[in-house]
Length: 384
Image (tube, rainbow, N blue to C red):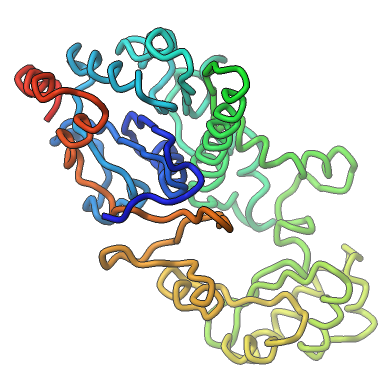
């Protein structure tokens, strides 16, 4: 496998294996060069990913050791690893890590400089803290779900991007990096409480400001950025595909009207909300007269903010994304490349996703456990 590269080379991270936002956080850290070891549950655990390991791309770039955290010997071994770590991340329900003997108190007792990252849906405290939930529940509570979708339909589910990955993974990664920077001065670690409900609320900050100002209606599908406006909307083309329009600014709007052959007095005042339904109807009729590829050709080189709506199968072959190498292929599996990009220390994918427990002995030895200690852990069933 390739040697890790990126601005986090030298940072050592322990990932207490899970699904969803914790793996994505650790994918980001690994893509930036951190040495992340994933401590997976032993093989046979019911609840893992629904696809083969090589396609579980959020697990890329790091080695896996299979550890039974219900075994006291395994917990003791993890605390030995914590002595050498910069960061530990876990995604258990509140109180579970403490019951296992791997809570912040136990970890900071052996490594006061450890950055301890915690990911939950509802947070470490509050009335819902121990309640089960998923992305849809977290974004429902914060106003995000109600704000997304057409005016005449139910709320639209934005995959699990708003709670799990946007409100969860990205905020935990930000917290980890901020705590590592702070540690440079204080020499001390700290605990990060990254709750998906908090992060998804934070993502809505702009819209809460608009709402307080009276600029945003608390009804989906009736505002500038929620498909209510005619100039920020997807339109179906003659061949049943979709054209995304983002012609917010006046000059782009006028250029778009020229392209569509709709530049008349009625259409020019793009901010007259009373006209929006009729404007959308006229644009929809115009867009349906040509296939998508023809609209893309006509828009090429014109400042109109029109883009084809790409599918998962089409996106990696778009010329712009090909030119930027936005997608890469690792051992035959196409996938997004590491982001963001760095001028001196570019990130990379050092290895494909691992099978759970694929590197147990290798990684534990690299992190300081002796052959005798490894043999004892196997004998006790703590690792496999």
